[in-house]
Image (cartoon, one colour):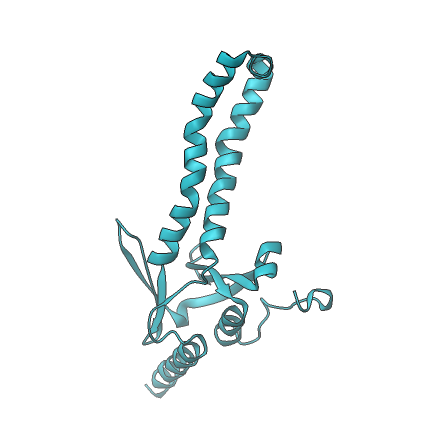
Length: 196
């Protein structure tokens, strides 16, 4: 009985420390630059998943060569085909901004609570004592903007993360690592990258 009480107190202390470090007792949004990352990943998926295979297919069947040699009427037909893709690319920043506005997280009790969605609302409660690994990811753009992506993983979730805080400030991300993974093993910055 005493051990169970001690464990609950330790988890509650961890939750209180994380809420204070992230100022997340109230609901918080991700970093304002998060819409850029979401729009960029969607654009990359559209390019790699739709446009690139279409161009490769057209190159092999010879239609790309015909399009490049086409007269003005042929170019107008190509523009009509490409116009929907250009419209989709134009909407990606809007989709990213809607994600930024709808994604919120907070620390309530001994849980991280994540609320998301505009049309389909979703609320997830992730107990802090179930989180086994916290990883931090920073690509070149993350480093330039001083932000990081934090993945919270619990046992049994397989390859997918339990939660993904796509873009947090670097200070908030480091606080997550420090508090949720006390040894800080997921965040060891090489000396040559200090200051980026």
